[in-house]
Length: 171
Ligand code: PNS
Image 1 (cartoon, rainbow, N blue to C red):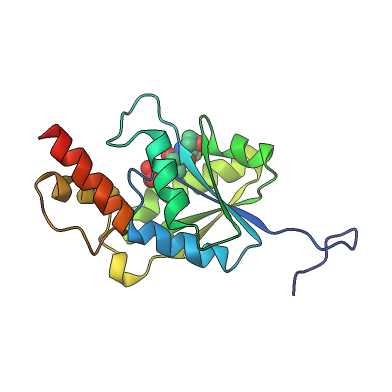
Image 2: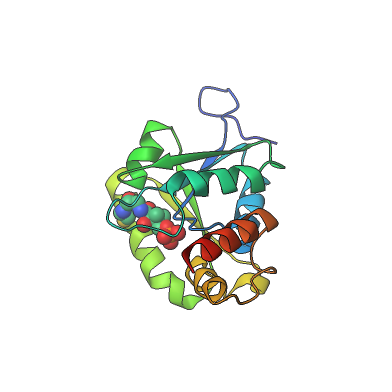
């Protein structure tokens, strides 16, 4: 049951899953799905990084995310530019959920979490990834797909199709 807020009303529990999602992988979907089962509303937000061009445009990443999260009625997809804490403040989101694959993720994630908490009081919760995906990263998927390696077990079918199309267009 939802805990009552100080004024006695039930408060909507909202969480943010931010990332580059270039492209979304099965590891991301695992974290998004598990977060959706813990919170009333989950916003998956694609970070627009002007200084880094990805394989996919922000709109393409958003479209792929929309399709793969369609089974979760409490998940919405958005994009943001700027600080993640400003996005949280503007949308009244008190918590960021991040997947942790291995100890190697921890140092940087902890640093960001502490910075975000210091900047705006936004907390970060770390969710251990399913061990099945502990080695999985969008960057590796892109590299393997570029050389026509098999990534069909690592990404959902719509992403696989997009990767094949993108790589056949550029080769
Ligand atoms: O999928 P990624 O690339 O690991 O995601 C990293 C992301 C986008 C979540 C992180 O870089 C971020 O939050 N960027 C937004 C800019 C920001 O707030 N930077 C300060 C963090 S302390």
